[in-house]
Image 1 (cartoon, rainbow, N blue to C red):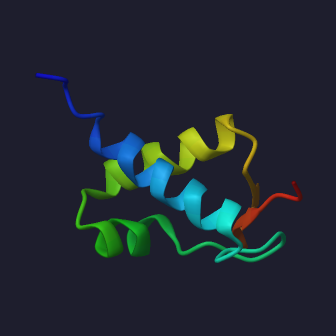
Image 2: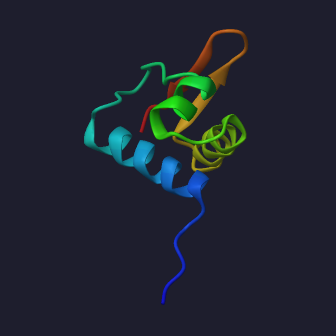
Length: 73
């Protein structure tokens, strides 16, 4: 039986799909880590790791003190 991806990867994959579909557009601010945790019903640490994964995929960027935003594709 195939193993399911970790929670953080499923959250990151879902947000990536929303970025690619245009639900989140370039320059748009994403929900905060706390809000992502609530939206996906995961721990804050899991939400943080998902955001980190999206950074590594070059899909988002952070602005110190302002939040995380969708990168230009």
